[in-house]
Length: 249
Picture 1 (cartoon, rainbow, N blue to C red):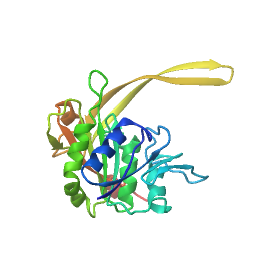
Picture 2: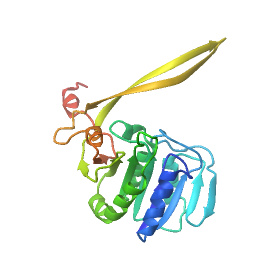
Picture 3: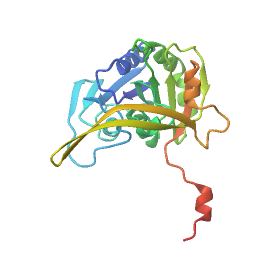
Picture 4: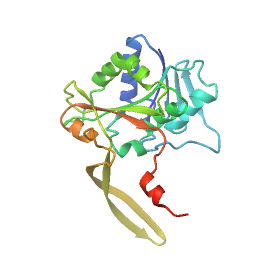
């Protein structure tokens, strides 16, 4: 298969390089187009004004002075790549993209942009262990071994597939719903004249189920017990039908 991979951690990060290596080992033709520098939490941001600088490292490796979504847009619409991919993959991300994180994640932005163009698209992430180390090989091998199946499942879907692997993965993959993350940020504030400096000093996370989570456990619950979570994430925002029906205009 012809595969476009990108990320939000940056062109040289270990996650995307490991994924590329494993996919090539499985016989795939891989094109890596990723941000030149880290673009984490850029969500689906894209460049609408100005010029994008692209570094062509060789026929299969490019880095962009832009966002993760830019990487997909310019790869598929500007003629940058000599091929049309069969699948678009974001990751492997350094850290989870669970629940509400799917809104902020540039890794998910890659997959969402690919899905918006009609390509089977997948976001894949993993978390570090108690020593701060990541296992990128096991998730890469899993995805490579199941890629054709997931691409078939995604054909015609207005959704992308979101995979999250815990440290010490138990080998199981379970269907999951998205939950809601409450980000309880802490800040330090310094004032000097009319200048105010605000620094994030920490963030406590709390996870709660979303109203749409009936039928499947929340993704964070699944990863907490050592399984990988898998979720089809719709690419377009929904709306509150009940309140729309009650609205008087």
